[in-house]
Length: 146
Image (cartoon, rainbow, N blue to C red; front, side):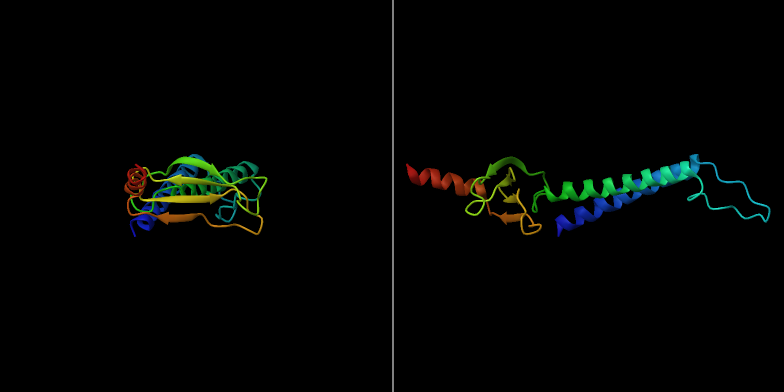
């Protein structure tokens, strides 16, 4: 639940930032003078500068949303720390037997994330595998080999 709450908090912060940028655009962009009937004309279509500013704002908002989702994707589901130690596994020459992918781990041993590099049959979601304590598991294997 903490994972999704953190995503919601980042989306709210990104929305507040986008709203602040929109208010700056409104504050610094001069409004059109009223026409003869006292109605202000819409500036979006006929004014090229306003159209480019709004296009740039749209691209900024999309980039902000993409960055929030991409950052969330590479976080530990338990402790919310960034996943580290990427390891490339699989082979590009043996796609059917072992497709290429990148594996990330939580440095505190909470789990691993396997992200496929090759997506032939459509997008494959990353595979999160939680561990109780990965480091304890690794050291127990090492101790049993002695």
